[in-house]
Each structure stands twice: as structure tokens, then as C-alpha cells.
Image (cartoon, rainbow, N blue to C red; front, side):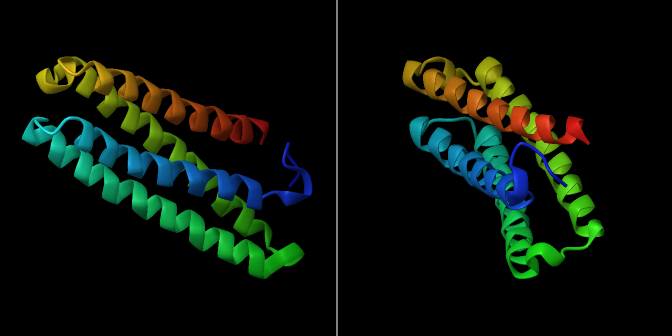
Length: 141
């Protein structure tokens, strides 16, 4: 499989996925730290998302290790699994953005914190960036 990452595929997309899932998990912590009076339901939702995003990041790490060890001898099934993981990660990021949007519209604590609003918008853009990377790969297939 060759894509805009050339011969480094699937390592490059796996690296991107691992990086962005780590970022999204950290972003849940950033929001909670910036809005100490965040409503309990949102604190709980962010904590659950942190765990889910960390699990996905760990899956990317597992696939990176497989790709590194397998080198040029990776089976076609592995590439399908990589694409499936990227598809899952893309959908996960879309769902995470829905939570960010909900926070922006429903959290009174966040609405009264201009810094948190700015950071929330930045976090949303970063997740959208990953979605763009994932879509570019998936729609080339």
C-alpha cells in the first residue's frame, strides 16, 4: 500500500494516530484543569473519554510495534486492520468533538471562562485535523 506517506506506510499513519489519540486524551485533562468548577456530568464524561482515547492510543502503539517487527513482510490482513483502526479512530474523534460541542453549549462553568472557551475551540480544531488526515487515507482506498 502506498499513500502520501510512501514507503513508510503504515508506520506514518500509525504514528499520527498514536500522537493524536494521546493529544485528545491529554485534552480531557486540560479542560478539567482549566474549569475546576465544571459540572460533575462533564467531569465524568471527560474522565471516561480519557480512558477510551488512551485505549485507542495503546492499540496504535501495539500496531506500530507489529509494523516495526514485521518490516516489509507484513501480511495484507495487517493493512486492513490498520485501516479499520484508522476508521475507528476517526469515528471516535467525531464523537469526541460532539462532547466538546456539548460542553461549549451546555456547561455554564465553561461559558463563563473565556480562556477555556478559546482552548476548547483549539482542541476541537486539533481533533478535526486528525479527522482530515484519517479521511485522506481512507478515501484513497
